[in-house]
Amino acid sequence: MKDFDFEKLDGQLLKTFLLILEENSVSMAAERLDVNQSTVSHSLNKLRRILGDPLFVRSGQGLTPTETALALKAPVLEVLDKLQSLTDLRPFDPKSEKMHFVAAANDMQRDLIFPHLLRQAWADNIALTMELRPSGVPSVGLLRDARCDLILTPLPPDAPDLMQLKLFTGEMHVFYDPACRDAPKSLDDYVQSDHVSVHFALGGSSDEVIVSRDLQAPPKPKVTVSNFAGLPAFIRGTELLTTQLKLMGKALLQSLASAPIPFEIEPVSVYMVWHQRSTNDPAHRWLREQITEISRKTMV
Image (cartoon, rainbow, N blue to C red; front, side):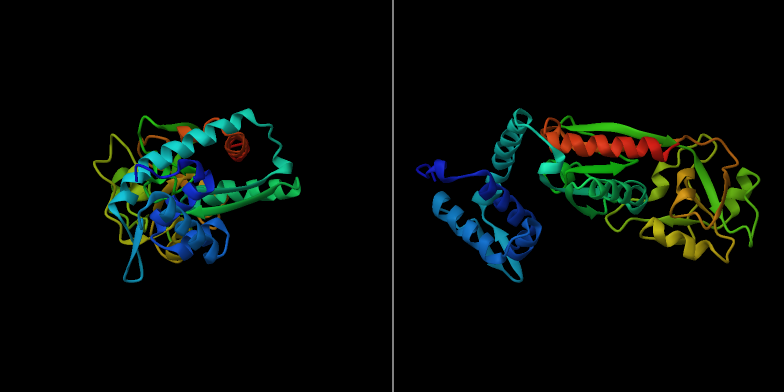
């Protein structure tokens, strides 16, 4: 390992290595890179020759990284970060570049922002593609390990190498079917009602944003669903309630009635979060600017 020829390494090889390490699969890495499997296999074999280590060994249906591969993760990320920092020196025109981003957001934030962003980009003849993943209650590792380019969330992970920008702040409302019940008139009425909550498949709950001096803890839900889009089907035709951002009445929950919560509750902010390595990248900066502008218009 001491005598390997580092001049044969390049950014694409290192990116391929990280994706194989993340996915434990050559085929999944190829899908992420939008290349065929043989291209990734060729890159892996080249890395093995350069580094003098197998890096990955087959185990069951996937690949298991060697100790060398695991030890290389942090320095490879550091090298790619430094390479990416060079991009602020290059000219940038969104219409002359092919851009691809991976964003993590639950369906509420996803549907408020990204359909508008993509429609506008395509109307402007910008070659933009996006991979949208659920975030649950996001972890630092989502960004630190380069599994996504940015996160939209009301529960931003906190770390010194992560940057965040508040996109908007909104009131929380209670949503219900007006054909089956009235809005709760008091704290007791709210607490004694049956509720629907979102418990994300990746962990965490939408109830974590409900902070109130009057409410010791959110009521235990009678029904939980894995995403916000599942809420209307369970509320319509029942006396169930759900507590969500008032803004959702413009999108996912537009078929329901809403009313202010009958007690004092903290407003909820949604943040855009990214790793500091992306701050000066002009394409990433362009993406952040588009999201910020769409968020501003959405709140009008």
